[in-house]
Length: 302
Ligand SMILES: [Zn+2]
Image (cartoon, rainbow, N blue to C red; front, side, top):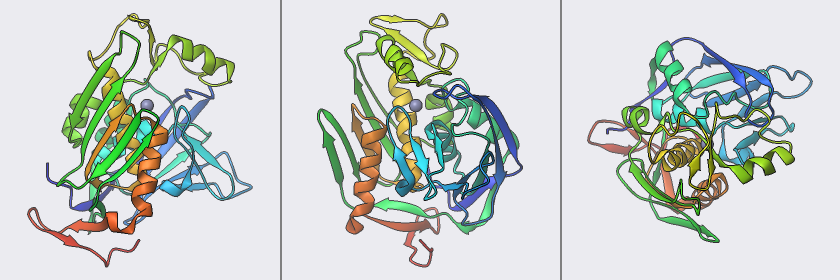
């Protein structure tokens, strides 16, 4: 795929609503087109006594357990953003205001597909300004226990994701994908979040997953899938992990590089992005001036 050259936003506003996976409340979000250079900004419309805007930036990540949470300087949070960000990444949306009337995005069916469908329904508008990519120049690698995450130079974004679970229904799965909008729609978007039965009990005990059900997650018990409809793909689990990775990486904006994770998750995804940005020799901002020529773009403001 050729990287998209111009910034994009939605053509008109889009609304979606549903139950939060963890909090269990009903939330409604309105995505609104935004001007060049805005980035992705969440606005908590249920909060008016403090700064209620939260920018999608790696430094605003405040939690990575079970889902990715962002927080601004006033302590205002938005969470479970990764499936939405994956859809924005695949669709190439750079600029968007997302109003939301609660802390957590709606879980919908536990995948990115409803978000992507909504984006494609309202349409994507190309804007007259170059898109700013993070181009990886040097390999950065993180390991944590038996988990590994690595990012290295490549001509496009490539994800290489491996998972390894004891549960027979999951087991060892690997997927490699260059996620443009078409491959994302066909291979990743509909892969649902998953949990193992014993973890679900622990999540409930911790006051989480209040909105979780077989309607928005795959639940595994050893060699069994508890959802009556079964899986959407034989390897739905690794597809969902790739979807999560794409969403987590989009906190740093569009990236040109190859990302490998083994037994990864939101924590190590975030650590990888932090380590990349902490090393100024490991990356630079670029814009795509033509199909074949990539130009350093110092003039694009940070
Ligand atoms: Zn997920």
